[in-house]
Length: 85
Image (cartoon, rainbow, N blue to C red; front, side, top):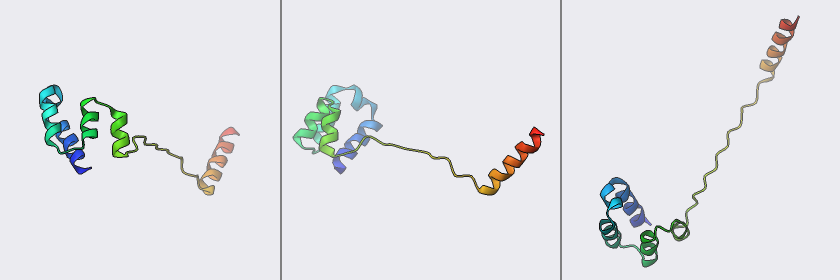
């Protein structure tokens, strides 16, 4: 897997590799990847790459508000009550 990561890093750093088809194919052939990975990269088949590399591209994040302290909520209620009067 490290050879794939090194290749992807190289592709990200060098814009010429992404623009030139011959440079792209040469970089892939020199990387020592399996024939299946080479085919997937040449075809730009993301699903095949995800399956072969066994990666989880879906990242989920959730943020939950913190619970208020009881003292703070009581103080806020008393402020609201005093303002309402």
